[in-house]
Length: 510
Image (cartoon, rainbow, N blue to C red; front, side, top):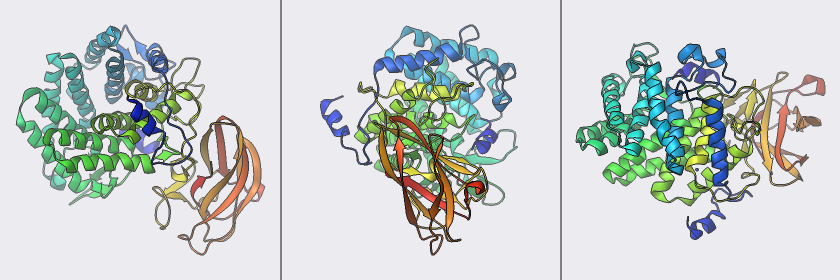
């Protein structure tokens, strides 16, 4: 994939249903999902908007125009690029597994044909992670259809990618085959473990399992730091680990760990998978909904995470994972664009009116395919915890330097005009709530305006100074909220009397 765009834009039985009414994640959200008809609606909207049945390929954008924002696929970017098409192919497989529809079964073969017409030589792509996504998708297609071509292609791609394993940094497969942008990352290595286990199961060749174990051991030694998973290692000598948090890193790792557990029966792998899953659920959500990670490649990240979490949910029967996935599916569907029924990149807010990228729409369509519906349609209020670092940030950076914060960190030090935090808030009913902002203000008293649904409700909310940046306090405010979607904006405007540095940890009380 084109990771530069990533850097810039940088989830039955009656007993199970009863269990879902009580969730360990707290809050006042209810166990809720959607109907099978909703899943059909989302998939039909996705296919009708993005699929070119003549080219047997997906368009990049909903308006079928080329936009420079992401124009790296065939025909000048009219059609999706390499790794997007692999993910969109899997979306069709998600729909086929749910429905058994002959239409989707035919599309599995057609999309493969269309892709090969655009890329007759897959090895022109220098990105091993791109090739790896196709190897993994081909193995899934083989498992669903029994078509030998898919297994053979996956085996070929696996061998080509594996040839870029060497002893630099103690092992690992290089991200790029041409030597530019030298790094070894989770996105390349973890999916290869899943592919290796699938190939071992399909062929009986134990060499694939040996390679999977080798890759897993390397990932653990270089890219795992306690409960946190790092993005990649780069640089000279023993290398420097870069600790970016992306949901798909956790998704691919938990998928790899689950595959290793199923191949070997070793329980520690399952513990690793659960730890990765719970890190995202606990720390990379906005009131229980998967966070917005940006545009271009980024909307596909939560699709990868959710798809692998669902496999973990199936393997373990974990009711909390089911609850989480169902609520995210409902959240995504509730915020679709009703004019064409496609879902945007931020599942917590209404879809935009302009063009939407296919990778974003596929993410929303997919989760509705693989998560079982429970026939509830309604708002998803979440658990009432809105970590500031997971909100929509404008001109503000995340930090994790000063201790005492919750989640992954806090928003640090912002004190210039037009900088702001926007919390997308969904409520079950119209109400007035007392919200609390947890903050630190070691530079002295600070002020910020508060807008609710675009209306200023406080020109200069006062944040009393704290004794240090690791001393945290709260300030409260009553706000009137609508049923459904709301936005709460905390921002800086000197014209309203705002001033001084301020760190925001989270918003609660909803």
